[in-house]
Image (cartoon, rainbow, N blue to C red; front, side, top):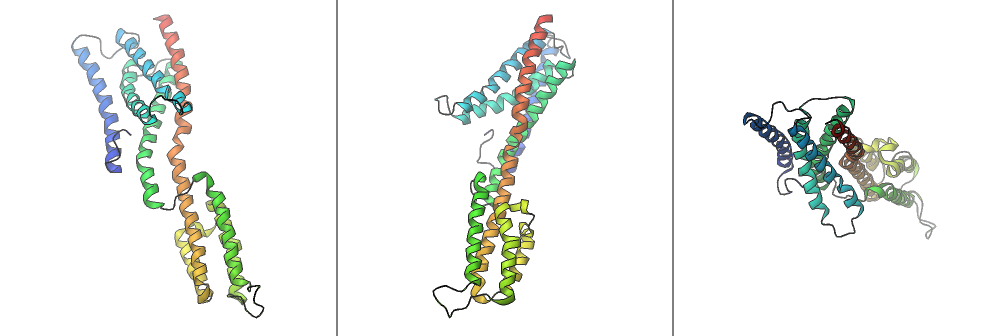
Length: 293
């Protein structure tokens, strides 16, 4: 979004961090240059003409930034692509950082200004963190989870695969009803072990994933368990055991997918409420500051 998708993940992350640092330093250097030219004192005071002007500028940027919320709520309206809105949201957020720092005189004031500035810094850091996650995690999904599914439907599909696992094992340990003389493919102790494996390890894992605490959640442990199970059952059941292993592997991929989606979106749980709180305190700070200016 900020640096395009044609570059490598490492390059995009480096460019985002560089842009953040460069914009902040450039803004500070411009303020220093103005003080050298005699336009204002250094360090600036929040109540000075420069400080007040930067305060108005920061407030305007924050209000523009917060317009992204109603834009997302009105996705069906012709208000321009969300991608363009986000592009401006990111750049304005980075520009606002040196503006606020210079406005505050690189320090904290009273309780209200201290909390407002702290919230602003947390909002900025969480936004940068979210932007970095958006560069790395989608690539991880594509490269490591080829069989991605809808995250909210993982447990539903897990139940479907659990039902398939039940049918597979029953077909191995129960004789076909159409033939009275035929015997099951797996009988005796191997059948008991297969049934126990299904009920105690596989089904709980397919239905609940990592929450089941099944050893199948570990790739190495799963490989060992299925290798042992494949050696116990007859060769005629080998393909069915391989299919059971495929189902477990799919569930493991989806558990990883759920973790990736959590980290891809959880920063919003911090960024959004902090943004709303910071905006409210900023408006209160502006009213009180202008009252005594």
